[in-house]
Image: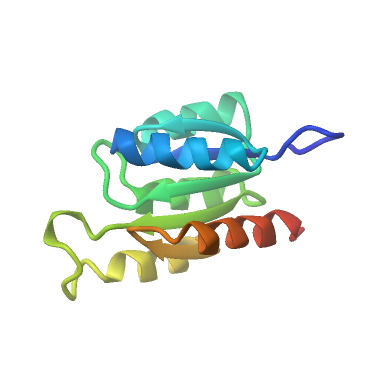
Length: 133
């Protein structure tokens, strides 16, 4: 993970292809090496083959959603930093959906963001997390 002069590796997990593509392009322009997955199942397989320095994961996804993915990352890769993102799913930001990011923090996410994301806030959080041991 992050040895020598290689760029930090970031894994983006989101079931929405446009979100994955937008985040991948934004992060690659900042010099990061980026891989993406459409759900937590695919993401865990990718992490086992090629560990990342940081993960950005959506909370509401088919097959394996963000909460379970975050818990598995914290169990299997305790040093891996996680940022959780959520648009609230089909229910929007009602009382129950707003809990997703709070639960993500309790499960091990270091930062949480609501969609639509602030590019500047996300990039700042990534830089801060990648500097932390």
